[in-house]
Length: 134
Image (cartoon, rainbow, N blue to C red; front, side, top):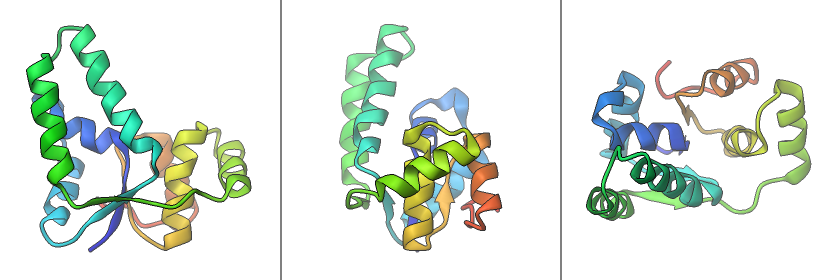
């Protein structure tokens, strides 16, 4: 069962002290299907990991191991989003452009969205986008 994966979910998989049932549900769904993400997800998750190293929360070795694990998961990258649609969603819901891109992808492809971001989840509900955890 395909869904849109955001970086907050993937980061939760990395940090043991951030376990969350929504992240667990998203990972369980990958056993039966795949996830899709906007291309910026690739950069976003790696930036989260780099910042965690700088804050001494993780090590270089842990980052390398986690990225290798991520690369083996069935995560695909979507085509470029509709820029106008992303801008409209970002403005309407006061989201970052990055977060609005996740919502635009979920709407465009009619897929559920996996996120731990409260504002993004609320915008998705308003837009009638299913959430993985709902």
